[in-house]
Each structure stands twice: as C-alpha cells, then as structure tokens.
Figure 1 (tube, each protein chain N blue to C red):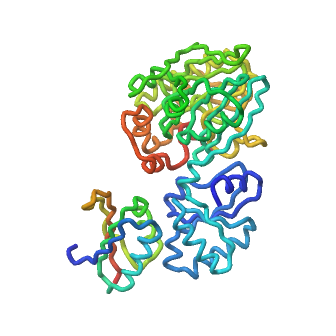
Figure 2 (figure 1 turned 180 degrees about the horizontal axis):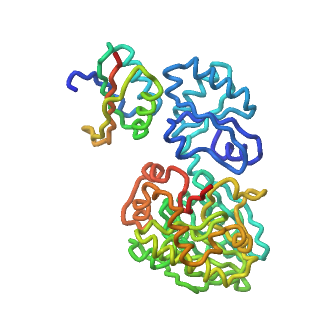
Figure 3 (figure 1 turned 90 degrees about the horizontal axis):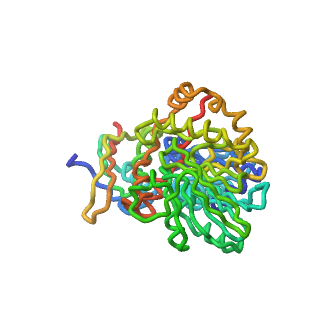
Length: 82
Length: 377
C-alpha cells in the first residue's frame, strides 16, 4: 500500500472523516487507494456501513494502531472502483 | 433538544418522529425507546453525504406520514446536527438530540412510588439503559439502592426532599454499568452495604451484609432486611423494606428473572436462582411489591411511568416460577442470550481493580442492559 494517498483525519469527529474521505476519493482516479487515519472509534463501523450503502468505493482493509502522540488510531483503506 | 425532553415527549404521547442517522449495525443493537410510542427511521448520515437530495426526499416522504416533531439522533450528537442542518435548509423543522445516544444512555428521571406504607420511595429510571435505582426513606432517614455513576442525581434528591442519607446499597456486583454506590457512600460519608461473596476481591472497604442482616431507620425503627439471593451472582441480595417493598436487584424483574450465566457456572447458579426465587421468595406474602433494578421494555411501565409488580401477579405471569427445579434449570439455560460485551471489565471497574476515564466508561456502558433472560416469542 505504499502508493496509497494519505488522509489525516485524526482529531476529527464524525461526520468529518467520511466527508473528507468522500472529497478525497472524488478527486482520485479509479483504482486508487486512500488511507484514512482516524482517532474516532466509531469510524470503524461507519466506514463499513458507508461502503455497503454507496457503490463507488470498496473497503480493502481496516487496522488499528497508535500514532506518534500515543493516540489510538483507526485506519481505513478505501479503493475507488474501476 | 436534550435527552430528558425527548423522553418526556415519548412518555406524554407526543409520538416524536425520530430520524436515527447511525449506521445500521449500531441502530439494530440499541435505539431510542420509552413508555410510549416513538416512530423511528434509520437513514445513516453517510447517505446524506453520498446522496443528499435523495436522502432528504426519503426523509420528507417518511415525515409526511409521521406528524410528530422530527428529532435527529446519532451516536454523539455531531453527525445528527450535520443532518438536521441539511434538513432545515431543505425546509424541514428538524431538531438535534444533543449528545446523541451517549447522552441518552446517561440521563435519568426520578418519580415517587406508591408504596402503600409510611415509607416513602422514589424510583430513578435511567431510561436509555433501562436501569432502575431507588431512594427509600423512613421519616428523614434515607438509603439509596443501586445508584448509577451520575451520583449528583441522588445527592440533589436527598437535599431537595430534606432527607439524611444513612447508607448506600448495591444489591450485587453490577456487570452492565459502572456503579455509583461506592462513590456516593464516600462522598456522603455513609456505609456502603454489599455482600462479601460479590465484593470480597474489592480494592476498598465496605460494610458487609449477609442473609438476614437487619438495619432499621426512622423514628419508629422501620426494618430494612437483607435477604440472601444467590443466582444472578453468588452475593446477590434483596432488600425487604417494612415487610412490603422488595428491592430485588437483578434477581427478579417485572417480566423476567436474572440470568445466571455471567460467572462460568451457569448450571450451578441456575440451581441457586431456583432456591432464591421459589423457596426463598415463596415464604413472602403475595402483596409484597417487587422493585427491580432493571426494566426490559416499554410494556413493563405503569400509567404513572414507574416499574413495579406485586409478587402474586409475578407468580401468576411468569411460567418459570411454577416449574419444578429440573425444568426450571433447563428453561433458564435454554433462554440465555450471548453474554453482553464488556461485562468482565465493568465488574473489575466496580471492584476498583482497574480505572477508566469518563469517555471509556460511556463507551463500555453503551447499549441496553442484558441482565435478564431473553424473553422468547
């Protein structure tokens, strides 16, 4: 996933991570991957629900991590459908 | 609009039209309910991001068939405000539920109970979770039973009613919410009454109660008698006040009985539950009023918004209470829902073996209580 575009959504409350993700995805070519880094635990189910309802993207992965400030992060990998 | 206003709208029959914009999984697990009708549409906020016009017209069509005030709800109140703003721009009068389901799960009401005796009692309903707690007074002496962690509610009530707090009781070690029992007892410098079998491992001192422990309060010494009630937990107790009010904790509810499976010994605890419910409660008069620590749903509410039932009516209504021991155990084990998430952590928190921030507690407490047997059919 080294060629994924990064979207830093840390510190943002919903609905902002999905609003920002949609804006970024709209600007990317088909097949491109967006890596969204969020600190909102609610984003995990929300990204799953979002790709189920909207057909333009797929969720190719989700992982948890810790950022350089020690915050829990929730990472969502989205791919724009071709 | 805040949670109390929404609850009051449901309770008073104004039948609000609730647009829940959380994702469908969260919605399926837990939603706004109360003692009255509320109509609900689940349309996630991301549908408003992807297809705003379409989502607005869906909402408009649904709203035209549901005339109550339109209230938008999400997990914490931000996405719902975003959607409410879109709807208002489109000409629909939409109100946001401030703080979302997180606030809904924390708010509570307090109502006087008809006790049928000189004892005064109030029922505190934490409606989002279905948790019930009590303030019981003999003359000016009061105790609080099974308080939730927003202890200001109890402190204010005690002060407003001119009472003196004499003690705080937890009927058992709670596994569905963080208890306010120890915090309230400490804040008011009164004893915290709990049973050793549940609290032996606790990281604090408490006043240990046993089966038949008798306290008395008020000028004429009204008896507050503890009855051992193992089953839901080994150290479960019930409190019989003035021989008339029975605070049953999670042992017996207005429509069900406590689940015995949250300790890894479901069969043994189900047997204990049988002895408690049948043999122990069998000695009490049918007119005794059962005041449980939870409600399982809107059908349990009385016209005045309180939840209680007489023992005689429960014996008639709950078929479980008429089964022989072996069939009782099988029926109980057969009715078990999956264990609620986070219950082991909440137990450790209530023993103060670990700590959590307010946000972490709110997240752990999300959802409705699942302390009763799931009712079938």
